Length: 108
Image (cartoon, rainbow, N blue to C red; front, side, top):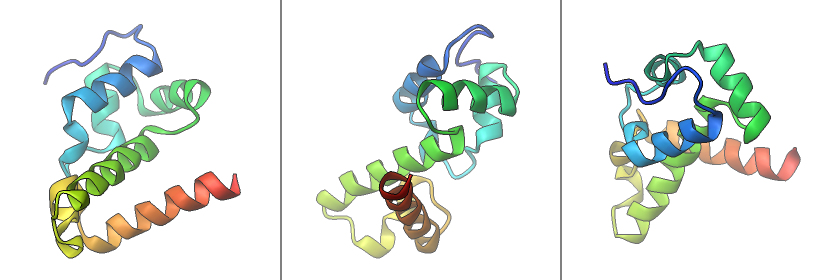
């Protein structure tokens, strides 16, 4: 398994590598997987990320996936098929992530 960062990497490096690598597009990518790739425990990674960027790794994965979906939508991918290209397991999961992002930004 490729190690995306050293034990002493900071949360912003994790975010940068996550975005650059595109691993968030895989449905198999979960917070634990990213933490493992970084050589960190999930709770430590989440603490670092919350402190530095205000999101957990799962929230960041969802943010990147939703952002990717919006790019594909502009390119003409039908809305009902977007989830297949963005790492979501279903259209409902994509819509739930969109709603959580909207709620998080407007109500926190």
